[in-house]
Length: 539
Image (cartoon, rainbow, N blue to C red; front, side, top):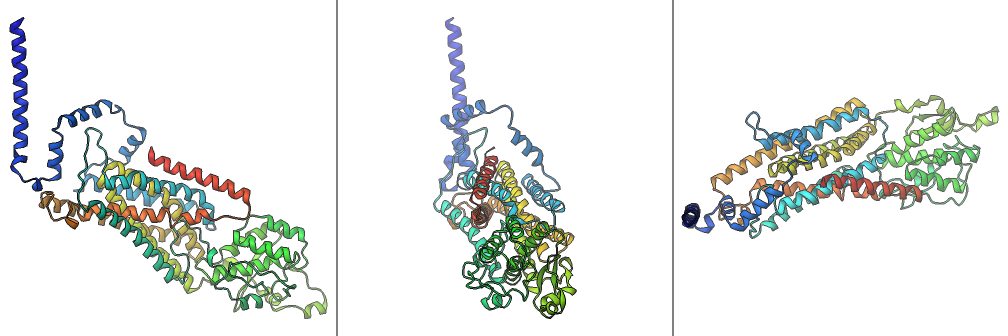
């Protein structure tokens, strides 16, 4: 019995000696090096030899779920991470993600009607905002400053001087870059809304700014005040010049027309005019103001006018939209113009009435002006640039970790759907055919692949640079840190996502209409959609 105990003790001593010798051998190269010459991987390997760290590793391995979550299994199938044609796993995943975020949203445009109203996508936009902000706050920022937790072993972060400061600067540079791009587009389009990622395509803040009071009076409409609403009339305006279409129309029909769902600005014009004079040419007043503001004062031509015409056709049986051509085109609703009877009435026939004989269909009206086309092309350029940043986000996130790349791809995908639909509607309103608008969107999608390739090149060059410098702490990185240019891509894209998810989209969600009950229901739906989008990022 004593011999057995002695043998067991000798065996234990032998094991301890072997472990001590192996630890001494493994730490000997570290002791022979200057601490400043140690690379980050060498420091991490040394930390893994600590007893407390080894106990933590054992605990993590034993408590790790045996079966991966359903979300992880889906991500593994979508992004296998295998090398292909000389490309590394992260590069292949980044290219696959770019294909996912660019292809399906553009193909969905084939199902969109040409006259789709982008403002009807507010719930989808809220869902996309939740996904984008959730990805930034739950994944990108923690990964940027702390890195991602490893499933099999404990991980520690080495805090370097100026590292967090440099990462914060990169985030701000990304944010300011999109501010500059949006501001430049607004200047180029003459003060329009620029490249609105929410794509509500409204110009509420400047409705009446470009519509001069003189032109409104000459057209028989009410003058426009600063907030875009109509000044109350002191006396009934003689609307027989161009607004005689609905003269004498029963107010009950006008009330029915007013009850239809219309854009917010259209509702205000109709309501204020109707309160002053229920029997005036309210439809023509609204159409004329919609034309003046939409065609002359912004890059979104005839959106409100078309909404008016569609509603008029529903409310007034036998009515059809037409345009009176001339130096200043005018809208009429054919089929509701009072009949002119007798010579005396014929003598009172207005130029608008006479010219109505030569009316043309709205679908065959002249092409939009050159400025409208220019705005559409500038918006395509902005889309192309925006897609480049999406590609950079794909490459930088997948090089950081597969999970981060997958969640970022999902957030961008949900954002791209309302984004592409809004751009598609804008191109249609600018005179593009449906086929040409879809083709233009596929061309801008090339920007995403370009951004991905740029990001892959930067990451690969950064990796080779780090291997040349052996990853030493005192190596000449950015601002004396161990960060390279490839490490700046992820915070840069986080800054762009912050801009898109807040400044570019939130203002659209803050827009409200006159119906308080409907707005409360819509707001609640938007918050639920936003929470659902953010919740997906937590899955």
